[in-house]
Length: 314
Image (cartoon, rainbow, N blue to C red):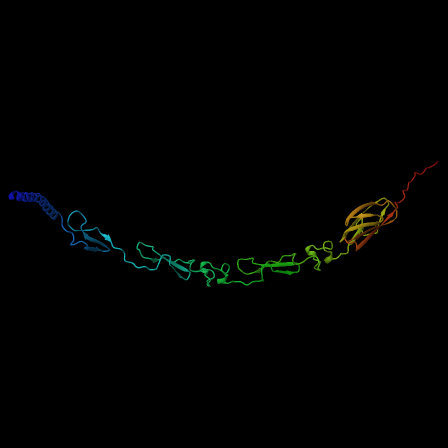
């Protein structure tokens, strides 16, 4: 009975041993095979090796039990920032440079210098930056005028007689200068200023207050002569006249009617006598006149002598 109980305990142990022996043999066989098919390339995990700026690390990177090197890696570049942050700006005169990362490393460096950098100069900074285009015209506060004003303000006017000139900026600088003289400038004369400006068109007709009522003058001729002339009965004569500063003319004497201020007229002399042709002209107000006359003497035609033939009687 006791033997049976013992057998029941021993037999399972023996059977388990028989089952573990093949498994253990297999493990030993695998380790034996692995140890024979690989060799450690490096000594321990974490060991490093460098070559120039590259490195590799020791570890177990495959399915065997041996150590091998990793692939080569490039070391991070060793650099230092030249400036503090992207966009930082620095000026030298009118040139400037900007902080940024302009290459393949991770550090900040300055850009190249940029001439006439708008962040490094401006009109009003107290310096005339002529190399960057500042002039007295576009930045007089820094560059100052290179000229002097000829007059005080735009629109200022100056007269000389009836001519005038005006102040303004007529060129590319920032200073005021006079324009050219303008003749018959309306700001320099006017009807009522006490001067008769005949050269600018003022007359006694359009500006009597300045020019006054100029005295008219008239001249009359008969056949181109101041007279007296003599003509025969029934002959024609030509009266011609001209006047100045006249508005109207009137005929009197041996002719009549209103006449033009200048003109001519043909008249047949139908009466034997001494004829007087008078013309009177006056200016527009009618206060001043001028008169002239020409005399034409008409003589009878000579008698017609009829000669009869002599009658001879034998």
